[in-house]
Image (cartoon, rainbow, N blue to C red; front, side, top):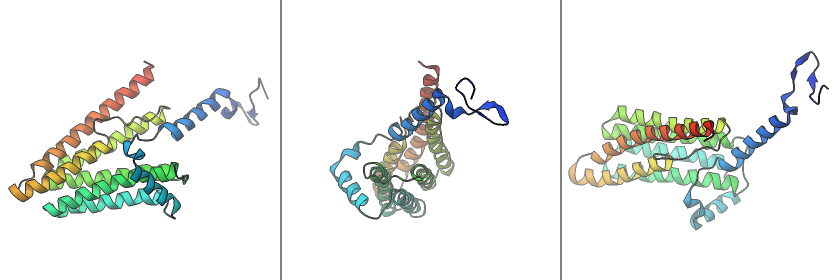
Length: 239
């Protein structure tokens, strides 16, 4: 023991960092950020139907991780309808799959936190199915709209918005879910485009609604990456 700092035998030049009060404080700060602040703000979380559904799921044998996985399944079904059957009926099915995915994204967190069923792997299941679901739906939108390159670009940029958000968290800040094209905004644009596209296709045989949505999602996701990066830079500068 030297000056209140413990040294490991044979490695006298390497003090154990866990004994530094500041290191402990930083660790606790990051722990609190991850547990309290890194939750996407969703107004529907306070809705009665959401609370009742989450309570029922929490009382059942269904885990939050299973609900998160189901979100990717619904997204895959919606993407399949969008890419392989871009008929009016297929577009309506794609919209339903998209919304089912969002409902799963809402309920998994409520069951985990309000329902007290958090798990050690919850953070992984909270993120990975989201990235898969986003990519499937946005790439499928690109093919349905006849703009596959824009669809792939939009999927890449959507994943990058999550990367920028997580980077802020890794730096010790609360994760930033701002838009203008966060996940809920992307899925709202996609849902409206599918429903409008179904009507457009039935009466005019065109896909302008899908094309517009594809471009809006890609451009909006790029802008979101910029706004989140600038917000992180401002925090790093301390201003």
